[in-house]
Image 1 (cartoon, rainbow, N blue to C red):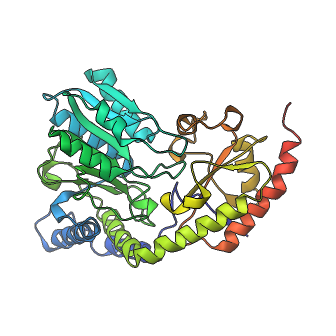
Image 2: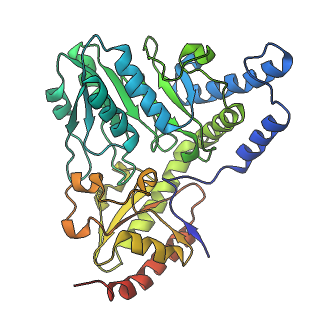
Length: 388
């Protein structure tokens, strides 16, 4: 048996999405910028995908910019947003446990363009106090960038309150939300939350890899990162990835159909998983109150199991057909202690003994039971070989 429980890294693509993309590649292969019928057919797929995504966010088609994925969307929002407002100031606010695709652009702006970034702290449950944001705002602040759901521990930030605080200041500050782990997993309303920019990625919602989008509210100006064409109203040049965009649009539509029931099922799976993990000797669930599981992300569970390095445990489980993660997949080729785990105060002895389980719409209780059983079997063996 196999148990794929690394869906926060990437999720299996819907069969319907694969079929739709194949049709576009085989039949509707025109360049969407071409004026002939083949080009118009390709352009139609882009319009329909934008409409499908816009419907999930209660916005208009013009608010959707297609990108190559979450990383590009975050870079476009942070670098493009700051460059467009460079005359207003050079101060950025983010948090201490963001994804590398948020840290990277912030550090780039600091290193090469003289920006200054403030990193808000997190508490042991992975929450950021919105009042810390209020205190960090300055006259030269131009952008705030925070994630809605933390990709490693599944904590949920109070985006609505943060957006309200920013708006109450009356300052012209861009509010960017990294919703890569949240889109499709919870209700999102950027206009109601005063969000100016919001990032999402296709392969987290059973769509294709290599495609995502950036929501940009009306009136938000972005300095383009890619130049040399007029596609997407000049905000991102280059021929659009039509098959990927068509697949993303369909995946977004499918993920949001019956969303309440889908989210409820994910929470039921999470409750079952946490219940089974609590039976594992020496296990500690991170950033999750067992009495308030539904205040966290529905699909992510971070667990520390003392006495075994996470990488060793990951490969031992892999040999038994269980696939989990030791942290963010985007950083898996660069071993090191997670800044997220440090930020929430995980004990030093557990920092390198933490793995992440993440479920999807395809996950079953049987897979969870199998995975936890394998975990219980390998741990005693691995712990015998730990250097003391």
